[in-house]
Image 1 (tube, helix red, strand yellow):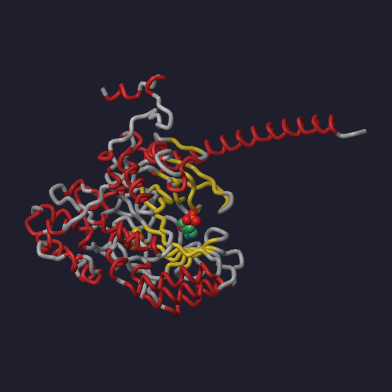
Image 2: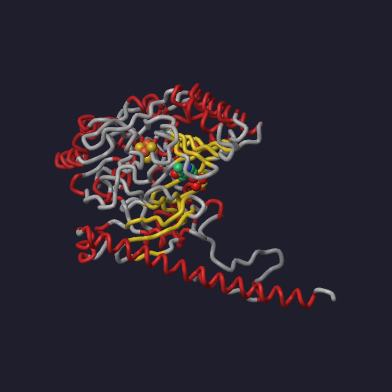
Length: 492
Ligand SMILES: *Cc1c(COP(=O)(O)O)cnc(C)c1O
Ligand code: SF4
């Protein structure tokens, strides 16, 4: 019956009436617009009497954040069995990050199936799900400290720099790339201190001012949600006062984990808005970069919070990390991208997961990234389509996933070059447990490891040489054409 509507004949086309070549979509299927509403938090035993007023207050959210296992037990009570708590305890014994989760996030987890919940996976490790680290993994795998002229500043790319203003966050993610500094010491890691101290910042401002090539500053951490309003003002105004600085981004996971702050912390929001407006008067861009990983992190509270940013003319972009069991399938990533766009947040990057200690269960293969990218591009506006990137081990910077010089999905090794960042080749490794048993065995033997890596580098070299030859041949061809053309047109 429905299909019949699509048959267009001369007799049923009336002037002025649109002709539907495709059937309109059933609005019920547009699930990116269906955002969780109502007192969803009251499902959690300890929050059953928490009012909307309390839940929407960022101070209540911060005060009631869960930082100890005993607190988790007190909040969830009998919702999950004791063996789950034991599993969490084992998970944290091996984790480089400590526990910190907001009541908001906790309420979004499906506690009837916590093993596979995509939000639980990001914040609460389970010992039973952990896997051994990749043999090529180190604590600061992106070598941020090696590119650091002043503690807390990474200057890797020519025209932009990363300023780590502080080392705390409203939540702690299991997979944090900066587990070498962010959060409290754990059994596994004694952290480098990057406190929010104005003395420390002075040296950073000075360095930036002495580098005319630097135009773009990412203010990160830790998390700029944790900066006091006067610190936002101080950092923003100091940077905007530097002639060379043209763009600033405040990086915060806040909108994804505690949107309430944007609806109730007027002082913080006003400080940020003033910096944005000062930037606008000086024709400099000041924006917010945030970090959503799963469509379940976006509720009606998020929409309201993003509306506040939008009304104040503040651009918000989001970076996501591709994570196994979280968003490593086409439907989830498509929904995330569409839902972000719906809330006026621009999806900017999807990162392949960095090699971070204790989170091999969250990493996935480059092939997965390549496959998902193919299905994400085309579903919405180009400017709301994230670029899939991989940040190179050893500090080669971010590269588009497709631009590898070599990828062997059997050994899981990919090779990239970054001519405008650093010379040489850079590597990325798929998680070992995704490889065949015989290749997994090779990764356990140091000699075989070296062999596999050398082979991958050789293959990249061969490919580069071939490409260079092909371009030389093309260039020669073009030159021949040009001279033929010019000999025809040159008078005399
Ligand atoms: C990611 C990053 C930046 C910003 O890079 P964009 O591609 O412009 O987002 C700057 N410095 C460092 C060290 C980074 O890792
Ligand atoms: S919010 Fe960002 S910096 Fe903080 S723990 Fe998570 S990933 Fe790390």
